[in-house]
Every structure is written in structure tokens, then in C-alpha cells.
Length: 456
Image (tube, rainbow, N blue to C red; front, top):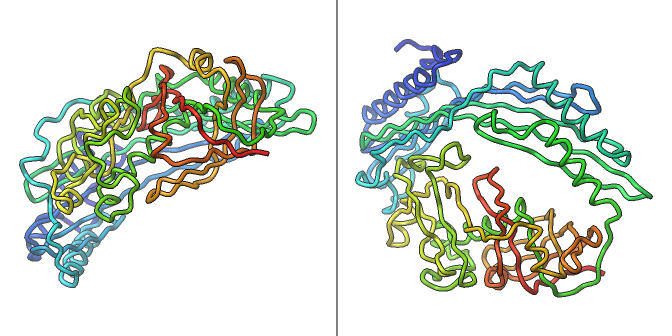
């Protein structure tokens, strides 16, 4: 290999398998170099991606950003000593210098008996076609036109829409390779496209903003420019005239797009790193009821086209459908190999996090859930990050709607939802069928009984 970017031949190649082959070749060279320098074992993660985004504001093009990123991370093990280094320079000399740096670092680190590669019998052997790669043959000019159309629909939706924060179209495609000295080599190519719009409304001295977005691996399954613009404007107009409410205890419903944040707090609390550091409010809760009896939470990492889908985790461990909460009872943690060893357990295939986490939806949509709630607060946006992962204390600013007799009475702002996540989890009484599938966490709207709302 000569001293140049040894993957450069795939830069403009439209065939992902050729780009994957070049990165696999580089990964093999990284691991061979690590062995030659005396490492007992090693692993490397290599990625490269490219794409662009363009933003239009008030009908004018505001930004066009092209990106072309690449990254190489190598981790080596000398016995139980670990060293890691990274680079974005794929020239032969830079890659070998990076491996050499990792090896040097390893010689000075402390012995850690829990370090090392994932066990070889846990590595993925079946690679499914998860349908993740859907390149969008779109020009910057075409993207600008879509963004302009989206914003124009929002601005014309209602006379109270007075300003815009812009509409953005983005498209990205990347390839990732993971390899280790157990002989595992895996490659994944995937795309992600999005369209978003944010506008400002004004009426009788009240100003509000809201937004909407659509994202998908397959550009053909994005919501239309008209739909995104209309939804962004509609959500903004509905928030005009928002006011405070008095401090109270009442049912609270988290709309599907924000309900996922509750599950994110939950997964952080059962993450192996938080558990072995004893920095979690769910410490030693395996096998105990955490949620109400009918709550089920699991992972589906092999869903076609889904954002979180993967055949293996970031250590090469095979992923699989699995239960995390069944009948309200915590049945599994979220562990990588290192945290599993620290806890005397087995990895759950979650190096790099959960993949397509979901809470089982119920039969009722948002409208029906509002009828079930009767009176309370529907939360559509959360503000701030007042969540303590050690104690579970929860305090976040909220925006939403006051619900009376199952219908929206008026918009609400400048209130705080407060409590403890342990109590809040057990107060979940229903999950809606209105599942938001745009992210790695999939949830319908979540209804909780009797939560404290701090207002006037």
C-alpha cells in the first residue's frame, strides 16, 4: 500500500459494496499493524459519510452545507492494558501512526481485568438485509425548491404566522465497518434523509413557535413538503394565547414525540455504566416491578428501514429481539461486554445503546386518550434537563394544553412537571396507538395519573 488515502477510490463510487470493501481492507491493515506492534488483540471502527443540507428562510436560501466526514478509531489490548487512538486521516502513514499511538498508550495504562474484546461466541454470524441504504439522487437546487415549498405552505397557512425560522432539507449516506482480532468483520451502509420546518405565530401580543419534521432512511417515505409545512404552522397557531395554570396535581399526558424522553431516562438508569458506578435510581431492581402491570418495553433491532436497526452492536455482538420490561417488571439491563463483566453478567448486545426500543402501544389514539384523561395537561414540549439519574428526581419546564372534558380548552406555558421517575413510571395508565417511529425510541402518547404541575 502506498502512502495515500487507501479508501479514496470509493469516494465517488455509487456502489456501496465497493466502499465497504475498501474500508474492510483498511480495517484489516489496522489490525495487522496492531499485531505486528505486539498487541495481543484489538478492534477498529471505521466510518465515512457524505451529504448536504440546505435551509431556506423567508423564501431565500440561507445556508447550503456539504459534509464529507471520516473517522477511524482503534483500540488495542496488551494483556489487560488498553490503549485507544483515533484519526480522520486515512493515509497509510497517519493510520500506522494512530495504531502506534494506541499501542504506546496501552503500555502506560493501569491493568483492568474487565477489559477486552467481546466473547467470540457472542459475535454476529447472521447478517440480514435490513434495507437501510436508499440514496437520494437530489441536487442542491431541487432540495432548495422542496424547502421553499414547505416554508411557503407554512407561511400561507394562517395570517397569524408572521415569521419563519426556516425549512431544511438534508440527505446523508454513510458506511461503517467494525472489525476485531477474533476474525469478525462487519460492514453497514445506510442513508438518512429529513425535511423540517419551524415558524413563528403572533396574535394579540402573544408570540409562539413550533415545528415539524419528517425523517426516514428512504426518501420516498418522507412526508410531503405540504404536510410538513402545514403541520408546523398548525402546531404554532394552536399555541397562541398560551397561559399559566395554577399549581395542581392532575393527570398528565406526554404527546408521542416527547413521550420517548421518559423511556430515554429509563434506559439511562438501567445502563451498565450507571449501574456499576452505583449512579442509578434503578440500582438492584432487576426482577422488580418498575412500571404499572400492563407495561411492556422491548427492542426490535432488525426492523427494515428503521433508524436504530443493526445486525450487531458496536462490539460485533449479535443483536436480537428481547424483553426489557414485561408485565411492568424489569427483566433485563442494557449492557456491553465491559459493564457486564463488572456486574458479573452477560452482555445484552447493547454496546452503543439500545436499538429500536419501543413500549407496547394500546388500542386508543390521542383523541381517545384525551377522553380517557378527561381533565389534565397534555405536554407537547419539554424544556430544560432537570433530571437526576441517581435519585430519579424529575423537574422539567413544559408547554402544552389544558384538557377539560376530554377536549383542548386552552394552550399552557411556563409550568413545570415535577416528581420522581420511580413514581411516574408506576403511574403510567395508558400508551397510545399514535406511535412516533421517527427516532430510535418508538412510543405512543403516554398517560400518567396524578402528577404535580407547578404553575401560579
